[in-house]
Length: 377
Image 1: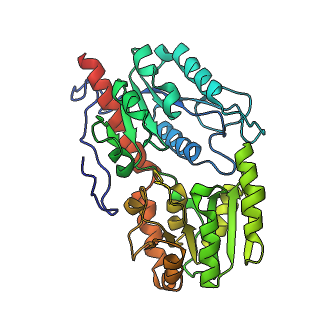
Image 2: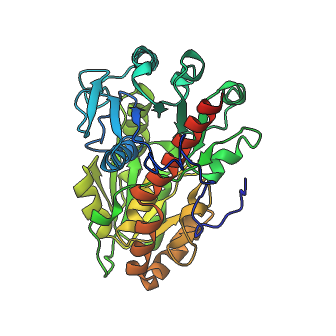
Image 3: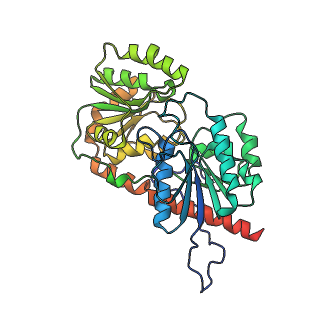
């Protein structure tokens, strides 16, 4: 695997023929019965913050448009085409649940296992709680990891999994170079429908979560150093440590600064906000596995100022889509330079590079490769 690929090059995997491909009496691609498995914490798609659920929603729509029969295991208030199997009546996080959710994830996986023989392939997005499916059923499985993999206990789990393992960035996969990855598939969304403006606004924005790893305090610092108004659209989590950070760290940090806290916004409001701003601040110091906030900002034509961490260098073309800085002072230096960037070119590139269609193309290859291996066994 080439872990030094530039952000301008698409992620690709070798083409695979579905079982039976090449016979004159069969279509070039089989229509598959696919289970898509989501966690029950947010609806699919989410009504506010929720990156993984947005990706799953986009993938389900694209697969159904291609003729596949898709069943989605998700919260009962999800709105997806195809068949929905409700794993909980309504999404847990918007309903105010403050449990860790591990029991619900296990229950979700068990529900899928009960129905496994109904599908040609099971594609799970619930991280570690479903890996046993690859050993518990003969149905081919694929697993996409949307979170961090740089934990000491992850190696054994990944190496013992028999399904197709998919990373969402080269950086994420690089944390386990000895694992046999089926593919690296960048996340994709229907970005073409997002609002955008050719002319930049004056404000800066931060979109994400009110959490220390997301760098929201650094975003306030950048805006203050640059003398710009900062608009924050961020979710506050329900867990005690999240509430404590909000009350005792974040709220005091707002005092004396030119900051507007908007709370958690829906998709349309969030898109409108970003399109109106000069630049988006992505100031987290943790190794972001992908960064949906980044591609949504770029789709609005709004450049990104962020740290060179995680997968961000695979997405942001420095000097074209934005700039990288080492700390708030460094990032503040670039604020006045982003107005010279071509917002239309930024939008056009990201809409193509990170489309739902490109994502679905790659996942279809993963699915057919998995079926081909099962067919040969």
